Image 1 (cartoon, rainbow, N blue to C red):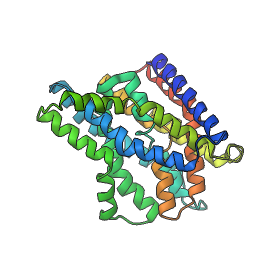
Image 2: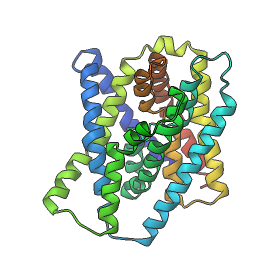
Image 3: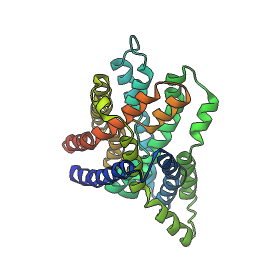
Image 4: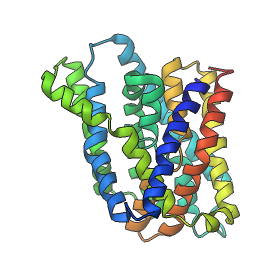
Length: 305
C-alpha cells in the first residue's frame, strides 16, 4: 500500500507543479481557480460518487459502508478531542482556525483522487461515509467554533452540499438496484475521470497563491500541522488497529484523516470574518507537507493493518 500511495502522490505532485507553473506564467489565475473548484465540487465529484454506487448489491459492501460511518464519526471525535487538548484558547486569537484545521481534512479534493487510485471504486464507496460525517460535523461543531454558535440553517446548507446529494442519489440507486442508461453512465464516468487532474490543479493553484516564505517562518503553523498530519492520523491508526476494522475500510478512513486541512476552512473564515489569510496559509502548508506525511503514515500502517 505504501508503494501505491507514494507512486500516486508523485503523479499528483507533478500535476500540482504544473499548476504552479501555469499560475506563474499567468495562464491561470485566482478566478480560474475558483471556477475549477466549482466545477469539481458541483459536477465532477458528484458524478464520481454516483458512478461508484452503480454496482451490484453486495452485503459485504453494505456492512463496510455502515462500518465506515461508525469509524468516520469516531475519527472525527478523536480529532476534536486532541485539538481541544493540544490547542489552547488563551492567548491565541486564531485558536478556532487552529482547532478546525487540526480536525477537518481535505477529504474531497485530496482524498477522493488518492483513495480512488489505490482502492478503486470500493474505496470511494466507503469514503462517501466519511464525506457525509465531515459535512455533518464541519457545519455543526466546526461552524460553532468559527461563528461561536450553532445554526440549523447552516447545517441544512452543509447537508445539501453537492457531494452529500450525490451520495444520497447514489445510495438510493444502489439499494434499489436501479441502473443508469449506458450512454448516461459512460458520460458520467468520463466526467468522473477528470477528478484527479482537476483536484491537483486546484491544489497547485492554491499553493502558488500563498507566500511560502512567510508561511515557513511561522512556527505555530508547524505545530498545528504536526497535530493534523501526524498526531491525529497515528491516533486514528491506533483506533483502527484496536478495533480490527476491515482492511479497505481502515485504509480509506486513515487516508482521509491524513489529508491536509480542508479547503472549507478558508471559505468559512472568509464568510465569518475570521483570519482567512492565516487559514489559507495553513491549508497551503499542510497540503505541501502532506506529500511527505501521507506516505509516512501509510508506511507505519503497513506494519499494523
